[in-house]
Length: 345
Image 1 (cartoon, one colour):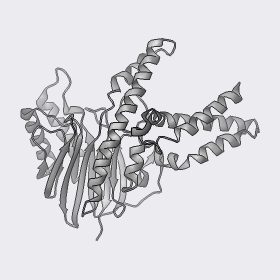
Image 2 (spheres, one colour; image 1 turned 120 degrees about the horizontal axis):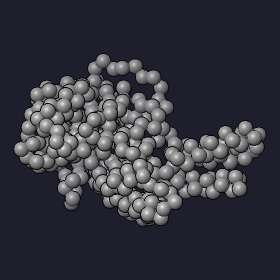
Image 3 (cartoon, one colour; image 1 turned 60 degrees about the vertical axis):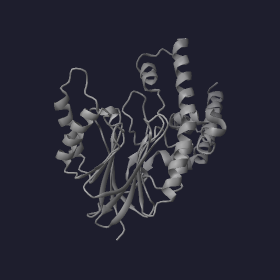
Image 4 (cartoon, helix red, strand yellow; image 1 turned 180 degrees about the vertical axis):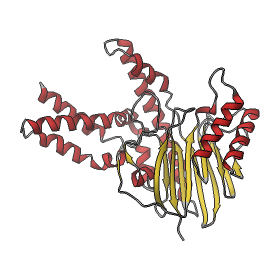
């Protein structure tokens, strides 16, 4: 029985290697396997240790299966060497602020001050924010607080839009493109740094709309109940269909990246994992700061669904990456991601 379970696990793991290779527009259900790939790897590792303890040659089946997916595994787990800090460069942070909304009954003015203090503590030259407060009166107050605390003189945001960039350095040639739902899109802007121009992309891709279901399943779901499995099925269905939309959005953004006359720093909330097709497409043009200077799985989503890395900073390959880290955020279900980038002389 144990050998049969191991064989089924091997077959499922091999199938989970397909999402980066199969465009969701062709067959979106395969993309859902990317969500469970890390769990499958750990399960295979457990089986491998068991067979090794038993001195059973079946351990080779686990080992070979893991080696076949090494390219995918190395894109999900960072095992970067220790990198010395660069003294001169650009500190960039990205955060999905989850609407920058106070809790019910919380004083809004005090909350905005706390948000501004958090953004200041990031210590970045440039902050890219997604899901910013969209009500005109409140967004103005919040932006003023952040600007005052961080000392960022330059800000770009389309009126009423949820994408914002604030910077110590001048911003030029800004352009924002929202997709049909207006909640997702990308903002392009050039930054005039002391070492030359850099083009920023602040990105927020199609939302999965599975957070509530995931919280219900992980907190109170009973695997013996049919309703729990129905929720799981709904979650995977929503993820797969939204993955197809995100892949189309990513293609549009990548086309804009390729046209950039300057080095690029693309950051934001992809709503997708490193085992996805769209992540593989971005990596053809850009490096992943977490893989260069981070460590481990690099989870950025703080909800009950564990192990999700969906927020990224992706610089051009010509830029040097240092000191990547993640910063927990008390008012969002995302962590901020932050990196120091050394610009070419």
